[in-house]
Length: 332
Image (tube, rainbow, N blue to C red; front, side, top):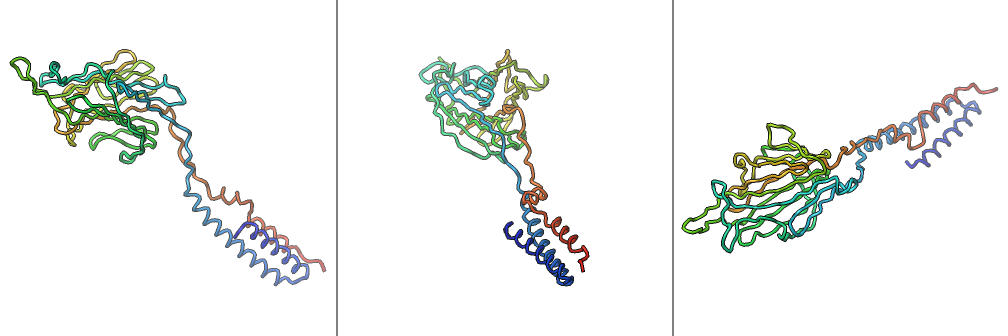
């Protein structure tokens, strides 16, 4: 029932009961009081039902958050930062160079009209796709993808994912806990034409592609574990997590021994990823966490008692007062 109707009913009960009591009609007053109590209990049961529903409704409003991914169309360099902290608080990721190498690690296809190496990505033009919301397992993320052809050789693509929810990401054998605002980024090589290049009387055969990437933060970088080449601090609370696996033609395999290589100099961390020979594509995906310093607040349940109090009416207390009034002996 609407609150105004319940109030009117209660007032009518009170007035009628008092009239009967003053007229010494105790039985009628008792019957009327019983009806009022039944009405109040019915209303309370209805309120309790509504309150139970409300208890399961969680407040889900989160503080404003905007992690920016700023991609340069030329060079493919991109900067990631939380907008409220400013660009200087984030990181800059630069693809430095790419080399197709033989089984011994020597660069191949460096001469001739088709080059199998890129000494610098600075003049390389990237196409940037529109941002879109995607699912990564049990996590949702904002995705920005950009790619560039390696003329006459293949294609390089980068996908960036900024998490919009907390959860787990990774491979069937490796997972990382991520929070809202963390970054996962994929590097993919595809449609590759491998070097079977003539050099004088010799033929060069490509076996791997080495890619150099530099991540620069605002503070000095460091290894989190001196015996591990997989977890690094980038300064300012940011952490880099590296996998030793690469997805080759949709099958996971270990990266070559000693890779990824990591070289730290001040605020710059240079990574060298080695992709094995592929038929269709190879993909590698590091994770960077810590762009958001504080975790999102936990949802707060709304209690049933708070819901009842917010209605501004206590049937129990009102009926108790009515019972007390009716218990007063009548004047003869």
